[in-house]
Amino acid sequence: MTRNTIGRVAGGTFKRTNFGILATAFVATSPTTLFAQMAPLETNSVASVSQVPTTKLLATGSLTPKANAAVLKPILPSEVRETVQLYLAGKLDQWFVKQDHTGVVFILNVTDRKEAGELLEKLPLGRAGLMEFQLIPLGPLRPLGLLLSKPPD
Image (cartoon, helix red, strand yellow):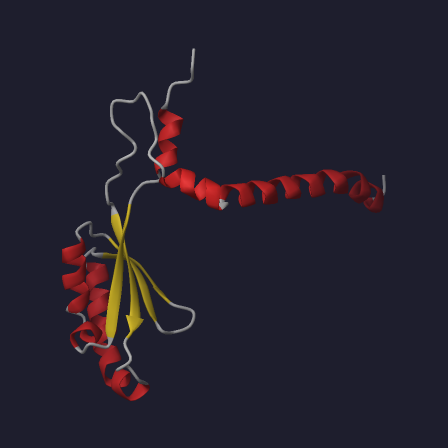
């Protein structure tokens, strides 16, 4: 078989496989599926999987209206230093900049919202009132508990 023949023979299989993967991705991210992930699960397990512990906090920081280049420039070096110190202390797991450059997103190794708020307010931009954070508790994905269920006999 020539290369073109192999491509034509295998092409249909690859297209169907790619479509299957794409369809699975759409189903997995559909509003119905996402709602099902939020709904409590009923299982026969001893530990209820409907209650999940908070394991991390997602902190979305946004610059306040007071923030402008002139005000930010002298504060940013100390902001970076103190943020690195949070990372080295194990409080900050991951950090990102928002693509629109209006703030940051942190994944914190903290489970208490009050503690997280205090840590972030102590950063230079927080002290200056130039950044505010929204805190979102994160936990394990509940539907994974279905994998622990015993199949019906």
